[in-house]
Image (cartoon, rainbow, N blue to C red; front, side, top):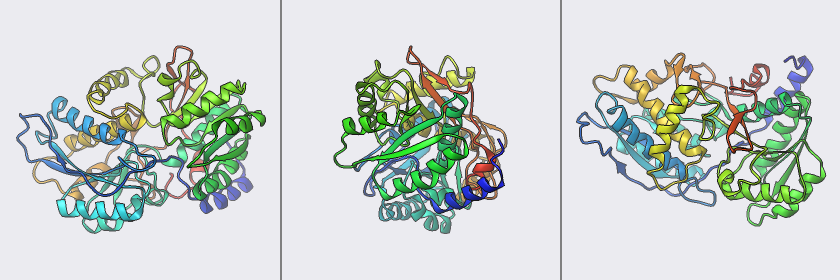
Length: 417
């Protein structure tokens, strides 16, 4: 795709001025404790890691902790640990504020962890200086904090950057012949930046007319919002980011009730498929990993791994949503990388970071092959998946496979390529 020099220059200016997260998460004050593996045959020295855990707050994401616990259990029982060593998790809650992140980062230093898992933390950048000073790498799937995602030092993300999801989704819509989209976000200053500096210029560059709307974070009126969205008569309508299953379920129901017949975009939301199956077909969602419902279309290895992940996640108390599977996959890939690297002797934060940054064409548990260690990006891939919910409620990749966001656009965004 050739956007032209003038459009590329314009995009560079507007994207550099933006800074909003495309995905939402939250949690609250520092807390938690060690969780050793229950596998009695693992007699090696424990590998202690930290987790910035979004388990409280207005839009808490309990599935992160569930995915972490399930992944640790899988590593212990199915992989026999990392060279016979169990992973032990020091979980610490955050609430999306810098203060809570700083508190957790200091706790991880005190506990002597060899890595800290991001846990989709909106304020992860607040802890980077503390972690780097202690030579503790920050590990994750997607950097929700755009500042964290804009540089590569001391951190590794095994999935794509935030920008991949919006750019990739727009490319997927374009591939399906969609010409217009009206998307919404909770009404915050960051959301206005996302729509004004990212959605509109990116959509315009791809030849899609885009409108942005907002809903109240405290008293959303989804009936009125749906009517307003439908009045613009878009080919695609929905959410840029979905903080919880209730939000996307209510919006879908109201869009259908006002007679909207087009495609509905629900970000990474999955819960509506079971809670509102009648209205689910035709909805579109994105992901960094293969998810339940994709078994008809996913590679054989991914199908087997999905079955295993589902088995372990089902034993936890949290929802089996995108966050659970993404966090599960991150833990398993972390363990696989250390197992194939130099895991003998004492593991340190430095050796963990070196091993992860050295991954090349690494086959991930539920994702694509990745190569890490980029000079300017902490992300090991830019590829993402865009799914369309079918009549049988299966999730079919919109383009048949992984989407690679346009490199010329990604290159304009700090840390995205």
